Structures are given as C-alpha cells and as structure tokens.
Image (tube, rainbow, N blue to C red; front, side):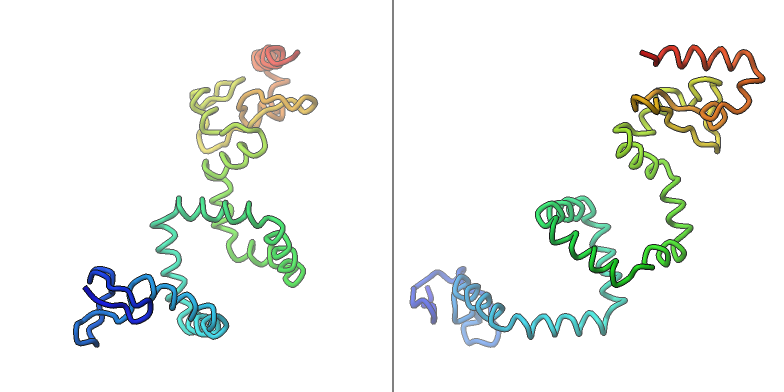
Length: 209
C-alpha cells in the first residue's frame, strides 16, 4: 500500500506509475491524480504546446509526412471512418474552410492536376475509379455489370479488351440499361451493318416502356 501525495488515499501499488527517480521506484501521485494534473497542465499551456508541435513538424516535415503515410496505410479503414465521421459532424465548418482555401488559392486545382496528371488519370480510368463514379452517378458499379455481362458489349458482344465499355442509360428517364462499347454507344458502324442495327433495335425495345 502507498499513500497518494495528492488525494491522500492509501492505494495498492498497481495504482501508481513506475518512476525510477524515486526511492520506491513509484510515482508520488496515483494514476488518476496524475491524469487529472496532466490534463490541467495541458489546458493551461495549450498555446505553448501548439507552438512547440508546429515548430517540430516544420523542422521534421519529411519525417512526419512519411510517418503519417505509413500510419494511414496500416489503419486505412479506421482513418476513412474517422474522416467521414468528422466531415459529417463538422460539415458547415469544413465547407467554410475549403471555401477560404480556394479563395486564397484559385489556381490550386490546375497546379495540382498538372503536377499529378499521370496519377490522376491512372486512378480515374482504373476499374476502381470507374466504380466510384458509376456508383455515384448511377448507383451501380461497373465491376458488377461487367461480371454479369461476361465482360462483353450488350449489342455486338465484343469483349472489353483495352477499350472500356460504357454505361448506357435513357437520357429522358435516366434508366440504366447495360454496358456498351464505344461504337455501339455512339452508333458508329451500326448503320452499315444490318445485323448490328437489328441487335440495337431489339436492345432498345427491351428497355422501352
């Protein structure tokens, strides 16, 4: 048993942190009192702590960046949930901050695009990027439609091979139809091929009300 210097209670030794500088190798405050004191000190010296942290991050920018990336990759799902939760809870505040940033940096998007054009295009035209956009726009993923259609165009039955299939939809009702190759989607080459023309007429008839 040991008496806490702060709360004056007799507590078991497991309620004290280890401290090698003391004779009994234990802190003179219990864990609970130490926690309360640390919190009070933090609030009291908040501005000094912020300045110190900011200075440290500026001096070790590259090291902190790598550490942040490593942590994010190891805890990617947790970080996504945390970011989403923060965004939803602070929607107005976040939008105002973004608005201020873009007013100060009107050319940010252009500069960022030019600097990272290869990465952006790879991400945009990757299957994952296409899935994100189609889910947002049509509430369906390209992956599911490709699997269902056996990776073939719904009209000419050409297999997707380096050329992307596009989501076809009714421009009046907004109804999703199926995936078509570029030619069938625009109608190129169909007018000269009666079989494709017939196939397209049957395809449109299937989805017409």
